[in-house]
Length: 211
Image 1: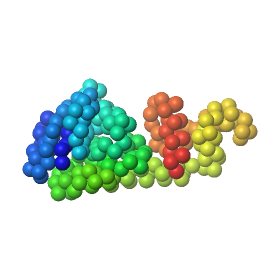
Image 2: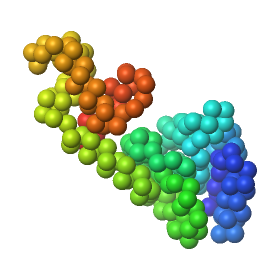
Image 3: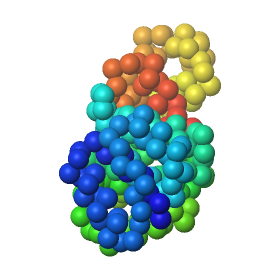
Image 4: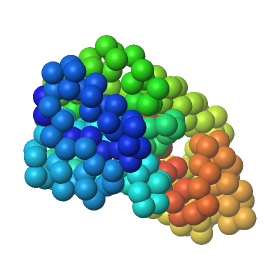
């Protein structure tokens, strides 16, 4: 396969390139940031792209953003995302479509070379691979949804309809303060810890709709 690597850690990037070359693959580009990744994929049209989640300049989710951008342009783009952290939310975003050809693994999995190479083949063939630890986190998030009380479920259902706190209070004949308390409990049970309340509200609704 012709492969592009996006990884800002030089040692890991070079190590991956050598491993892939030894396995008979061609690394057509090896870059260290999201912008260079998009440019490399556009220029080389690889069979597969390996992307680190955290890259310059902010070292948060630049690689993930680049992967989403590439899939938005070409939903059949074959991409393996590597991460040092377990993020069920990031994985859920990547696997939101049915296009296939996508994978999300923790970097520790690269240590099992044979399994790693099989993973690349699976993704290149249009399959999907997700790290078992990420699957467990996704299941825990679902358990959080199951933990909602009937009233909290009602509130979340109304949130999914796009209703404001005032509208929810009117529909359930309760006070807005009671609605706010229910919503905060929903956020806690769904493990939504972002500071932005609007963001948490969207994530809660997405969790409900996916269910």
